[in-house]
Amino acid sequence: MAERLTGGERLAVSVRQPGPIPLAADFHCAAGELLALVGPSGSGKTTLLRAIAGLYRPLNGVIACNGERWLDTGSGIMCRPQQRRVGIVFQDYALFPHLTARDNVRLALGHLEPQTRPARAEQWLARVRLDGLADRYPVELSGGQRQRVALARALAREPQVLLLDEPFSAVDQVTRRRLQRELALLREAIRIPIILVTHDLDEAVMLADRLCVLHGGRTLQAGAPGELLRHPVSPEVARLLDRHNVFEGEVVSVAGQRYLQWGPYRLEVAEGLEALAEGSRIAWYLPDSDVVLHRRGRPSRGERENPVTGQVIEMVVLGGMTSITLGFDHGRETLRFDIATHAARRNGLARGEQATVSLLAGGIHLMPDVDPTIDEERA
Amino acid sequence: MDWTALSVSLRLAAFTCLLLLPVGLLLGRWLARARFHAKPLCEAIVALPLVLPPTVLGFYLMMSFGSEAPLGTLWQRVTGEGLNFTFTGILLASLVANLPFAVQPVQRAFESIPPNLREAAWCSGLSPWQTLWRIELPLVWPGVISALALTFAHTLGEFGVILMVGGAIDGETRTLAIAIYDRVQAFDEAGAGAMSAMLLTVSFLTIGVVYGLAGRRRWRRG
Image (cartoon, rainbow over all chains, first blue to last red; front, side):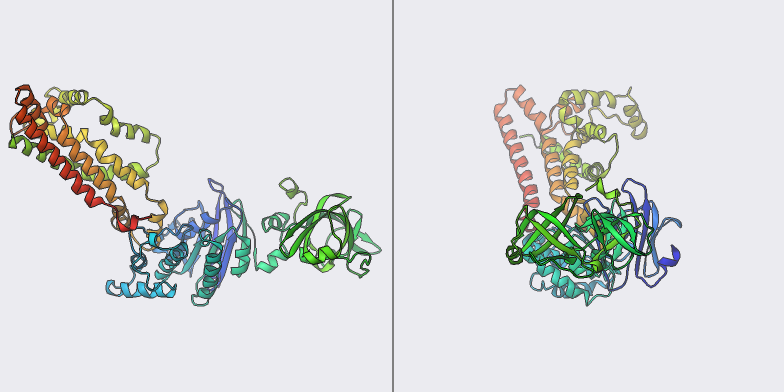
């Protein structure tokens, strides 16, 4: 563990405890990187953020930043929040209601000479585009303005890490988009690790360099958003990332060639099958972008196209896109994909109709390290 | 008009407020933040003077202040004086009788501070003491003012406990409330009326001033 912590990364977290809040989390975040902790409610996201800030003490673990050990339970090190130089934006912002915006920021400038603090507070407010509102109390500011004061206060301390706990959840959609854009711009100016806690997957994918998927306090997988969405390490991760097309299949061999047997279909897979033992049952996943609808009456005969035919059991029109769910005779598993609404109409898709699609071999992702039946009970 | 009795009442109210202020702050903050099994018991003990008839509370205090009781004996040994029928005695009784008025509003005020405000202060670099002075106390200020106002007004009007512990010794334990009772007993309705009007005015002015101090702040507008 020590080797990992003294690497190039700026913030490294490795904490464990059986309870009362179970934790088994390992992740790191480099300077200038934005790592999003994603997971359902109760997955331990906020607890981890509080542990980094020094507001929660896990039973076992190490939290290090810039080579400084903020927490090392083995050595009895537990730095207080005041000693950690952490900037944190709370979900409800936690602004001091009896202080103006300027004084809220000024309070975090204790590391500067007293006479320089008012001017510096003004500078921070200007930086988050709140100049002119310094004399307002939190109650006199809008939700978005309060969030900016909280951000200015967090940054005013010149922190070594910036922690954002669901910072956009308390504002309306329009303000949220604007604030997200401002955060993306701000990132270019501050070169510190930023940890974003969110349950909004779209927000995480849009803003983060890497995602870290959490469940029950455990880190299940971390990686770039695109990588995670295409290659979840397990059905559980796929489910947590709101991915639908997770199935169970069997590795078969026909004429020296490996295939993935899924019900009556013998599917070709671009990579990963050769390493697996014949007869093993595995979970597999296909992004809906790799499902190609066949035009009616003109089935594709492409070499690697894996044609499968199912019955439309659900059609949901969401604006210009339609979500199609196909059911199959060989089991309860369903395949879901989105197509343009006009394409659905042109192909005469309707509930109860048969439809044929290709499952692109290059998109099939095998998850051989897990028991494929594990997730079925939860689904 | 019994100016001596008014003076005793005001002195008693002022000392009670002064001495109960730190007690209310410490006990109120502790009860607001601490989590332990016996907390309801502690809260019940603090609230007990609210529900006990003043004569019952006064009786128990009088008994414990007596020279046969441990407290009375100890006091006698340390100071060389008794507690019953003295200003110190009615002050101690007043402190006990007013404990819930001094503690409960402060406790409620501390309870209303969201925990993450303290945490935000710590993460902004403020020590626990700085957090108390710069964040918590300004936020509980209206609760403290309420506690002081209630304590002051209740002490001015206290009758049963004072009479049981202090009697009616002129210049020592005879408060305005007791003097009014004495005047009525002596069929001096004009004197009782003047003193009642005085008590009403002083109480009203005191409450008015403290509530004015606590008044609605700009930052409380919602």
